[in-house]
Image 1: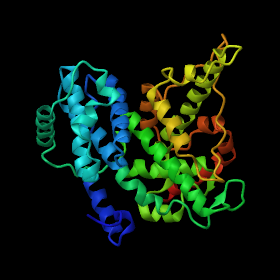
Image 2 (image 1 turned 180 degrees about the horizontal axis):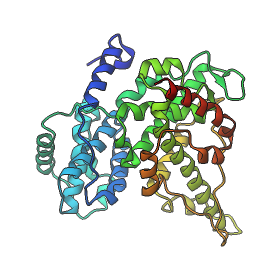
Image 3 (image 1 turned 180 degrees about the vertical axis):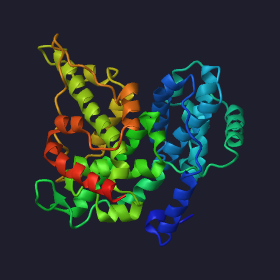
Length: 372
């Protein structure tokens, strides 16, 4: 086993080139599964299990990739078989990507609240048979690049001494800025698991877009540096569509947060109840929003890196906040993929601190398009 991560070694560029070659051979995701509506639920289960077992992001993303593409090809009739396939995908991914002592044990899986609430338990024989079925379905090839395989390599060039804040002053501490940007990039990386739209892009594009979206949220200028372009071989024009989808998700999750907070304040009684009556109430918001709160409360940004102020959620005529979806709806996603890449006008209207830089960023993208 290597003593250091591959992206910090001498062969980092060679490994990156190999991964870029392999991603070109990945099968297309057709989104034909009848269980596509339940996809996010099982993604949340895999995320919770991988966090409980402290698996690396590459194992988590590979598990979701295996589950998505297996369901895209085959029909699974029963609920227990679907749970078995999901857990087997996580086991295979952890054995391939993570350390041996991090591979989940059967007792550990069955004891979690996710499966203990069901009317069945998974057996060793069922998991082994399902793992063999998965390996045969993927021709015993688990070397499948995901965005998690590229992100840490691109983060090496994510911040430089020449970076400036969008308000024209230099960054106070590049080290702290890089730590904060890394937290944002890994948050965006988890956002990409929540919707299959990101299979429309190559994994390296998604990883680079996570870095680009993080630089925009931290108001770093330029939004895409020469070092990032050199290390990724992508210009801002190549990434603008994927960055737009990520920023829409970022904006809408903040709207969900404001709506949930407003709803919580609306039901608070005049007298403050004991803390124990509140701590164990089930959450009234989706798991994806729970992951957002968990990520930023238990992995706070580095000191000196303050996240942008979120926009306030719109109100309806009855005074209640409208709940935004975690990602654009289907017709918006289709429109985003079909149109020419550009910097979204709507986002600059919603995210106030980005508004003054829309014209400069679109000019930069336009220059790159004119040179082709």
